[in-house]
Length: 336
Image 1: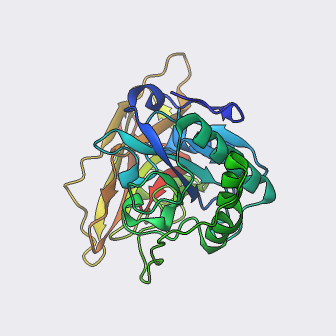
Image 2 (image 1 turned 120 degrees about the vertical axis):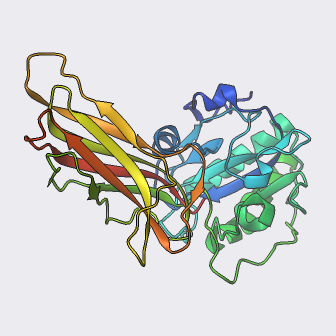
């Protein structure tokens, strides 16, 4: 694997060791639709999803590398790793929530320097990719095969910068003679499409306290609201619920489910129940407790006409004393 000397190494494990090797032939730039530093992007990949990019770039030019450039990273759909072992190097860049703002001067400079290094280190040719598997440089929306359902990423302003400033300067510095980019850009989608799979992070919390039924009945809990993910959306999520008032041998359960929006019926085909029998290790009668609800590590799609919700139950011995939710959070990705 190869590590860029000018980036801060923030290695993701186990992905860095476990994922397949690639022969890098492309460099694809993204906007993450969040104003994050390189460190915050690393933390999101580490804690909230099974996706990742090779690099993350903050507004101030802070650059982090999460996986070696000769190891697959899962930010580019069909370009991650091809059957012949070739693949793309990816970078997520800080942006506003709509990825409509331009790169800062610091970001532009960092992209240029990285682009030159990738040419020197891996021999990526100094041209804009003519097809989805053509070696070269590009941006996420350039070819449909680089996303799962069409995307506008990295945004119009940054596409212009890529064409007019970033790519020509990569060529100039690498060869001493600038070239005009001439790529067969595909038009941006004219109908709503699934967004960049790494560009729509979910990060919600709710500090409102709630009493759980003492008899262990299920209670729906809300994050921003009760609906976590809407109908037809693809997602991968992790929920955390902080509970106190639990006694020795209390039983805590959490589960995701799909709810029919017309009938209110709960699905029985989403087996996401997580159960813990609580044990107190000292003489305290009740303590604070944290339980984590983990979704399947793969991407899922909410059925049409349904939404995704989460429930919690807690039952102390005897079913008399209630427990209380003190805080709850949700992290993940929507529109993968």
